[in-house]
Image (cartoon, rainbow, N blue to C red; front, side, top):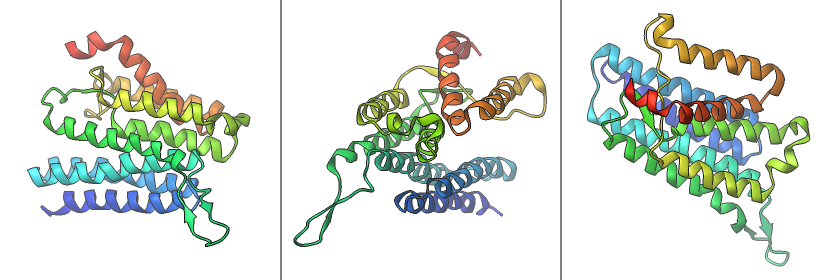
Amino acid sequence: MKHLPNALTLANLFCGCCALLAIFHGQPEVAAWFTAGCFFFDYLDGMAARALGVQSPLGKELDSLADVVSFGVVPGAMLYQLLGGSQSSTDVVTGVSFIRVEALPAFVLSAFSALRLAKFNLDTRQSNYFIGLTTPACTVLVLGLALAAHNDRFGLAETIRAPWFLYGLIGVLSWFLTCEIPMFGMKIKGLDWKGNKLNLLFILLFSLLLFFLKELSLTATVVCYVLVSIVKKDKIVAT
């Protein structure tokens, strides 16, 4: 049983690799399901480690390595596809395909995600709240945009895929991942209303936005989370 948390972490990594394959094969909806699997196993591994009392330095490092793929490389790949990375150029003479250099900045987000995870491992302040945007929240935001573009929700596909928008988004998200802004922790604390009030309110908000915005509710919920955290940053630190 002591190996169960690490097995769950590896399941997170496995789902992340599968999500990457789905993205590069132009199947964002399949990638979304595998990404959901990443979230599921990422939540379970920590819960299992605490329940079994087998938390270890190995588990902590393995968790971060898995998260670099699931919540770092995966959103980078989504942005790469949105920037037209799937439309590789082909030499008419040799038939050799080339990557699209203009889409490569998407993986700047992956690099900053790795930096954010490394900082998290060393930062002792982030027990009750987070410093900067978490990589899972960043992934949710990007996933919402990728799905909305795929389905051309509200006719926004062209705008979402616009290079000026995506380059700007990469810059903003990279900054938020490593900034010093305190943000609410969203861990489940028991079964009482008081300890989970914020979590439940955001679940309610997401449910309402899902009805009106569909896939974009993922992005909108994370944006609301960031804005509320910025407004309430003094309260967050005081708790």
